[in-house]
Length: 107
Length: 414
Image (cartoon, rainbow over all chains, first blue to last red; front, side):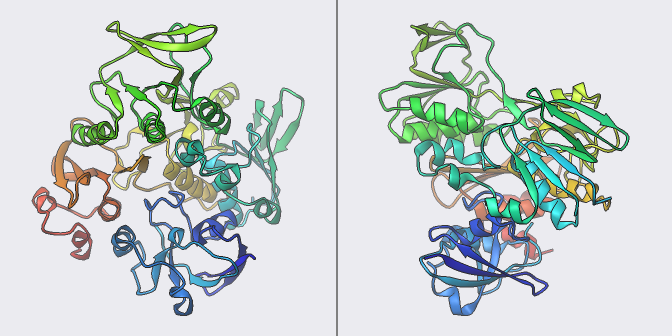
């Protein structure tokens, strides 16, 4: 069963996408041309251009932030919040629903 | 005008980004994206890694879904190579040898680059391959087996990535590099030495200062590589990874100024004042915030994406210059190299040892100004320094050398 991701832009507009389990939130966004999620490095924790804020109700559904991701979020182009993640690290599971908000600046 | 027909020749990372961005910026007219490969736009970096190992297939490499192009009304034409281009004051025509033809109002060239070959005897033997696209990777993967001795000619990004992938799969691998060090013209001697040591610890054999003079073969298939010093390396497979040349032939034949790439200005506009050229095929002014003014070509995902995003603003009539700190990454086995900025050999070197073995950050200074950084296994420091470069934050050598202060603190202090 597909996962479902709700992407909210900084201006409040929302886009809902069906996602293949096993894909990341970054990959799903890039494949569908969601503005504001760049994902330059393709998910190899090199660029921090896929920063998102994960809705609190969904935050616990993912593994914790790794040391590298933590270091990278500290210097993300849009200031980090408690619910900041790099969406290339958020792998979707069967039937999962996730709500994320895209920051104003990625680079 | 955003209602005409936009034709984009070249369906790589740059072409795919351009059609995406130009739609975002309000281009409402028809868009055609033409590619010579049978695959829709895909990510090339995994070809030397996940794809070669077999852990990613072509579907996983696709940049955008088929639905995306359909929803955005972008006509993606695959397996067609444009070989005739006629430009006029208000548009033009592009045609293939097979007689297919497209009229356009605006044109973007994203034709990329193609691997250089080595002009030595035996270069045409079976088993002497290059790596640029999916078909190259398939040919390489088909011959890559533990029983085969692999020789990689060229110690640059692609060569070292493939060598590391092969070595990890148990293939006996030797890298032959003509220069005295790996990654010359790309990183400092200090970074190159650390990269070489890491690879050698993983069992890779590296011969710097060595040049192949002949490929030996039997029954039409390569069996060995003869070096200038007379050494003969056994080889059942040879990857030639000695750089790429821009595909600017089409542009040149159409009368556009080319000089080692299609010459463009900071808005990605070519010499006809109308056509744009982006990505690996473009010869552009240094886009750095504190530009050297030098013209260069940038073969990177970053440049393909960011130049395309800027060129989209040119096409919709709201031109914003292309500005950004060029950056590059190369994952070679477990080794993660990231570079930002453009250094030259004469620039000073300041080494910040990492907290753990294998980690190292190198800062390059021109006089007292930070111009580039080279990070091994330190992605957090890399991002901090990339922002330092982008925002032209002043970081003195004394501060950078003080490893008791995390580099991210440099940003907070401004």
